[in-house]
Amino acid sequence: MIEDEVILSVKNISKTFGGLKALMDVSFDVKRGEVFGIIGPNGSGKTTLINCITGFVKPGSGHVIFKGREITGWKPHRIAHIGIARTFQIMRPYYSLPAYKNLIIPLWSPRAKKIGGWRGGGRHGDRDTVAVDILEEIGFERDSRVPYKIASTLPTGYQKRLELARCIAIRPEIIFCDEVFSGLSMSEIAGMLPLIEKMKMDGMTIIMVEHRLRELFRVAERVMVLNFGEKIAEGRPDTVIEDKRVKEAYLGSEGV
Amino acid sequence: MEQMRKERVDRGLKVRTEGIYAISSYREMAYLLGPRLFFILAVLSLPFILDLAPYWKRVINIMCTYAILAISFDFLANYVGLVCLGGAFFTGIGGYLSAIFNTYLGMPVYLSMPAATLGGAVLCTLLLLPCLPLRGVYFAIVTLMYPLLITRVIEALNIFGGTNGMTGVDSLPNEYVEHYLVILLSLLFLFGMRRFVNQDIGLVLRGVKDNDQSVRASGIDVTSMKVMAVFIASFMGCFSGAYMAHLYMWAGLSLFALDFSIIPIASVVIGGGGTLIGAVIGSFILVPLSELLRAFGTFRIVIYSVALTAFIVFKSEGIMVYLQRKYHQFERWVKI
Ligand SMILES: Nc1ncnc2c1ncn2[C@@H]1O[C@H](COP(=O)(O)OP(=O)(O)O)[C@@H](O)[C@H]1O
Ligand SMILES: [Mg+2]
Image (cartoon, rainbow over the protein chains, first blue to last red):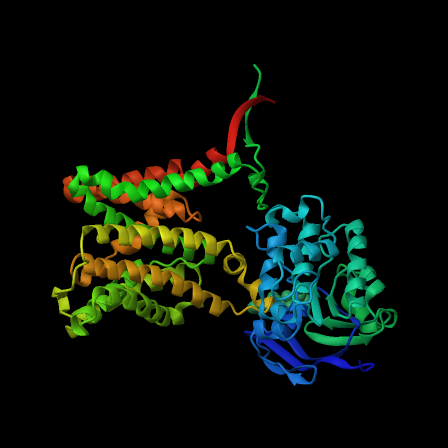
């Protein structure tokens, strides 16, 4: 692997929703294997930025380049297929299915079939076994009943983990996490942090949108700050938070 | 006074442990297979039982035809999330195609029916392709319009026999072929679809119903999944249509009648949605019922509607869901 290889390059993305400027000329680069944070007050365009990159919203202008290849405006399933996974801020598991059956869907995807390589799984392996393996990795106790419960009956903490597991199942190169910590208690977050670190150890590049700055700064190497759709700062967490414009943007909002 | 509460308890069989099947004794196998075998044997023996009442023998064919349409509706609505009111569209296309193949091209019945089923499914899928991005009620309305549209086209252009329809369609060889063709195919579709929806690919379709955004984010093309589902559903519907064309030896505009869209839905409501077998049971109740009510003339619609409304209000879960619960669980009163 090349040191400091830029895996994702976002250039001058803009997006307007009927007059509302949700994103203005946002650019940033992410290096392979790093944890990159995106922060900003509510409504500053973080989710819209993820949507533009992952194909759920067509950017008005600008370019998204993944491993040197232009992917701007591709359909979401094609973008996922080449290795960019995402969670949803408003998470909706497949409610009517048991937790482990939720993972059959990503495991059935052309990408998962092509890559295979899950223990005992792979192209012709038993997907149920692989699904339970993944859930165990992400913190579902294997011998308990939790992995077999219907997804709608799971507590929020487990639903968030399930959302992450759904991403991991397609073995992506990049994962976008949209506020996976929000709505969780301190101890639940403490339980999730090692998962993020483990995903990083496994070689995934992680881009985290977060409100919980203290927790984010424990894992993120660099962060970028959005405010009213504009990028106002980028750099190491400790320097960014001292930035005058960042302090102004956060003043009076939910804060650190 | 002591307060009592109704408690539901799962029957103590291993086969019931949430999705993991562990069949360990003949008793458990009988528990699983019993109801299925009973149902299959009962349906298969219908033509012989009804030898006693010849008028009702024809009802078997219609019952099974509607059962197939109801399976098709239940599959699309409850396993893929596409509420398709186009049952009449499928029967019409299938019926007309089979009649065309049979009378214009001179294909024998055993070729025209499969060709119409397959060709009709392809045609219906292609025609429905533009509607696939529509959701919920919009998809429902558009699919409801399709049969109306085609009847107007046939009327206006006066093609395929115009309002008189196409006569001279070959009949099926004999009465027993008529019965058993449709009985065996409805059983085949029923058990085939039950197997299909529980396979991994069936789960993906259910994922599309629950949350299509997540399916997209997993790298699966939702549109192609919907295309496949619509193809399967229209395949079943077109078979029903082709069968009816040969049964009545005629293909006319009434193959596009609203009944073929509405009665399957009512059957699914009565039988219990999302069970597939409920769809069959529902049509086995509704079709004979509407035959019985035929004596009342147009007033039967009133009786029919009242019965349906009462059913939805008092037993909205559907017969099959209710029976399954009673079969797998027992209830008892306990003190609080
Ligand atoms: N699909 C949409 N249609 C119209 N406006 C939208 C849409 N998505 C987001 N917005 C608007 O764009 C702005 C940015 O929203 P969002 O990206 O969700 O912010 P964040 O995730 O940072 O809280 C908000 O003002 C929001 O109302
Ligand atoms: Mg957001």
